[in-house]
Every structure is written in structure tokens, then in C-alpha cells.
Length: 105
Length: 154
Image (cartoon, rainbow over the protein chains, first blue to last red):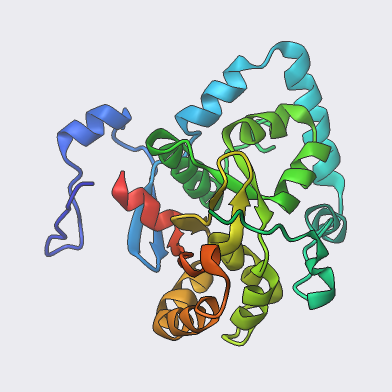
């Protein structure tokens, strides 16, 4: 984590080693996000883990992924919520039958 | 999904993906709930397989729902209460371990609310587990950490 100092004009300077490491160039756009923890600076783009996954897919898998993504995108918000709310857990006492006893040692 | 459609991820997705990538480098004990696991198994394997391969589903140990009901008394929704209760009563059947160190969420309000009421929640939790049989007496509360906070550790 880098510590940056705000100058009198409200500007901050990103250390050169970070500029180099992140491949930033003059004119590149960064996003400043206000969060509960403070201000976060995002370069955007895709993280390495996601990139590695995408690059591991062959052409057929990418086409399948695209088809599925388009199908998902065409769903209404209600239909999308329905997918993610399937098998939603109840907190009621009547639902406790599937709870597992911890082993006693 | 957005990548498959040649669109850049949203900021929230960037935050979540980078946190996930970082956490995956420091631990192999990544868990999801049984419900999430079941939903992912019904999704296109191309998208779901990497997450299912990285994570283990937690089962519900006895008293998970009882604790979730107690948590709703602190103004958590039943959906959030279940997730928080998994943090203490979620059972990894393979390793026979219970609970997690931290729940990672993009929901800043949930994390803030949990933090603000933490002393009362801890008292309520201790009052509950002290009356339970031996293995449950050793259970603990998880931390609730936002994805933004995870990125400050990088």
C-alpha cells in the first residue's frame, strides 16, 4: 500500500515505480471511488486471475460464454433475482432438520 | 459475463475480483454457502467451474439457524443473518472445521452495522453458546471485512 500526500491544489502524485508497474501513461483515466474506508483509486481493466481464466478458454468455450452472457443479460431483474434466490435458506425453526451435529471429541 | 461481451467490468466487479484474487493468494480456505454452491452448479460450467474449484461449500451445523434468528434482533435481514451465522456455524465436512475467520462482502453497510453492534452481538453470542454442548462452546464470531478493505492489505 502506498501513502500519497495531497498538495495545496488538491493534487496527488503517484510514485514513479507504481506508474511503471501499472503501465500508466499520461492521459490514462483512473477512477476515484469514495468508500467507507476512504478513497480508492482504480485503474480499471481486468485482474490477472480473471484474465488467466479468459485466456484459458478455447474459441468454442468463449462462444458458449458469450451466448450465456447474452441470455443472462436479456433476463429481467426479477428473473435474475429468481436465479440467485433459488433454494434460499429459511431461518425458521421448522427448517432446522438439515443441520448437522458437530462431532464430539 | 461482461468480459464475454467485450465490456469492461464495473468498479464493484473490479473491487470484488481483485479482492478475491488477493485472498486466493494468501489462503486456500475459501468457502461459499451451500446455496451459492447449488446455484453455481446449475450455471454454465465455463463461468462457475473456476469458483467451484477454488472454494468449498459449508454445510449448516446445528444451531446455525437459531443464531441467525438471534442476529435478526440486531436488525440484520434474514438473508444477511444466515450468511453471518455461517461464519460461526458453517461446517466444512471434509476437514470437520467450523466457522471462518472472515466474511468478505461488497456490502459496506452490512460490515459497518456488524462492526457498530459488535460488542452486543458478541455478548449475545457468548450467552447462547455457553448453554450449548461442548463442541459448540468453542465457536467464535467471524470478522466482516469489505472488499475495499481487503484491497488496502495488498
